[in-house]
Image 1 (cartoon, rainbow, N blue to C red):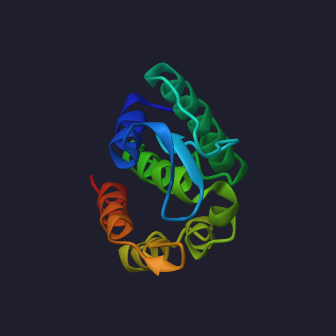
Image 2: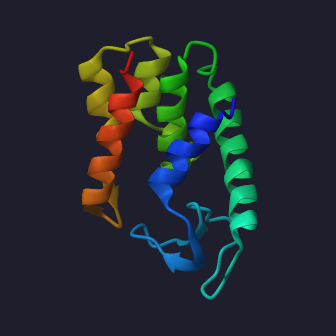
Length: 144
């Protein structure tokens, strides 16, 4: 389920950009991390960015539901996972060690943290921004 908390968290992680830019992962991006059909030179309004954010979050929720993970999550865990999947895409998540650990119900902090930290690269390089983002996501996932 998309909550205001999840929208706020993702907005803070993605930052609003009204002009398309090439992200470190070499994808044209606009709004709050929206990449679908974005091309160099595209512009948007804040309202368009909000609409795309909600649509993109709906795709993430659908992916969590298809994995059967939406039932067992606290709100903090859901928000943290939504942020990660929003950033890496459901396809990458579906192939991840993190997904496997979650589905096995191996929710120990070392197992989850190590699997989560695998997603700190962009464009083939460790990205300092992603290191910080993953830490905030992991901290939220394990917050009481």
